[in-house]
Image (cartoon, rainbow, N blue to C red; front, side, top):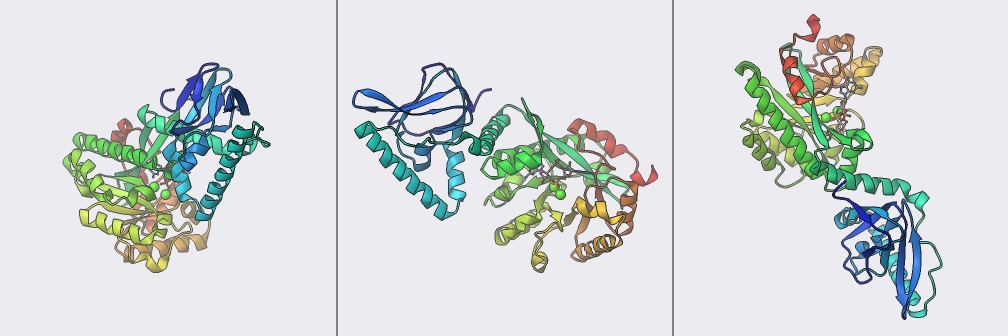
Length: 398
Ligand code: C2E
Ligand code: CA
Ligand code: CA
């Protein structure tokens, strides 16, 4: 694989003492010798193997390499870019950051003593077993970075049904990653990972572009009365949504595909509104630009109802946990009715998620829920499968 994977032949130098620190590495295969010099002789500091992290110290404190590293046998390393590490450090508790700096300083002092007196370091530098999950995460992150360039990401679309029109009127775009070795990785896993770094920005940009491209193609394939009401809804993450030029970025993509803002919605998860000030400004900006806003995963734990009235949204997505329970649980059904009434009183509509049965659909419709989304209407599908769904008859007549 190109990009983050690097191969080294036996004896090949990975980096040398004094080099500027451009990256760290996770060792995928092979053994690496870390060494320095004492007088004229080479002094081995450590041997590292699969799962170990190499060269991270210099990257963390942005100092020249304090030791050299070379491949013992042939090696495969995953490169961890400097910004991947620096972003993590910037996000940590300032006290932890200080402790890390202190540890590094001690390590460097120890290393100087080693070099001056020729005494080997007493402790091994890493514990591969304990750090394995962290290394896997770093590796996956580096692979995700490659995935964007290697066309491993795709976007699928799930239809949204309008009970008042008895037709599909919109789609939610959901991103998929087909990993060359692991197969399909759930967005729940890789979006969360991408959100920890600025990787979410290219991933989000990709979803945005693909969504507009698909909607524009559909608009060309259906009669005007259908295309007029057809919209696409795109999930956005915290990092994306608080970019100062977020709304103009969306507008520029919408316009590039000849679409109008009213055909586009952003989905913002309720938990995001924890950063209330910034998110509420962004939502107001969307409204002003004519872009729809959906409040996602509503009612799953982060809602601050006392401030709900201050947010500009036009749809609320009712989490599938409500939909699943309401048919058999009277109290849950009452709660859902209450939510629907509250949301409608605020001038917004409800999209119920995870609708799998006709009973659920009927109960939701009869409770005043306007939009339905879920396997009953259709699973997330490729762009070229969408056209028949638009022409299909309403679910209640089946
Ligand atoms: P979400 O926004 O709540 O999306 C709905 C999830 O429910 C999707 O999972 C969808 O496939 C699944 N689903 C839809 N109908 C049914 C149903 O009838 N039954 C059941 N059991 N599940 C149903 P998916 O595609 O795995 O996405 C997971 C989450 O990943 C999404 O949750 C969303 O938060 C996030 N995500 C996906 N694509 C993107 C993206 O491009 N950007 C961002 N920021 N987040 C994304
Ligand atoms: Ca969503
Ligand atoms: Ca949701």
